[in-house]
Image 1 (cartoon, rainbow, N blue to C red):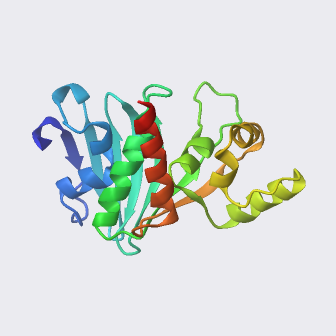
Image 2 (image 1 turned 180 degrees about the vertical axis):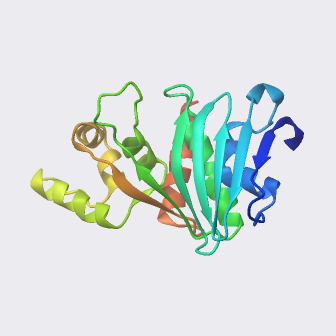
Length: 206
């Protein structure tokens, strides 16, 4: 089925991963499980000595850009933007990528859960979405979150605790900020537990 993809690979440095491995690590199998010609998928692969940059575009994905860190064994999601708002691809993409990366021995995924305050036409809602799908506060964002809760007189200790109620979610939509996010790929991790509970709820409602 991979023959329906357009793949361009730089030959400056030798490839660390096969094309098939990279396809699974991008998570696009969750968005396009059949990889048809109609999916219009193009993949650009740029290998470097310590990392591999991959850029994906498709009928459903305006731009997906990831950095696979070979030496440090984690994946950074630099950009994920769908062609349509609220198309429902985020959960399928995260689940596909997380499971593939975990099975391949990666330790974690990283991302910036971005909030766009510029007023541009592009709506970036990662600061809301990624917390629902298992990404956890990371590094300095933990302290930023704790300070916001303290300053606003709230008692929630984690992102998922806050956004699990409608009132808390409404508060975060209004007061939230861009944050450093990490998804723990360890089996039975908090990240996977949050993601799986979300998917179960989504399946019950569908």
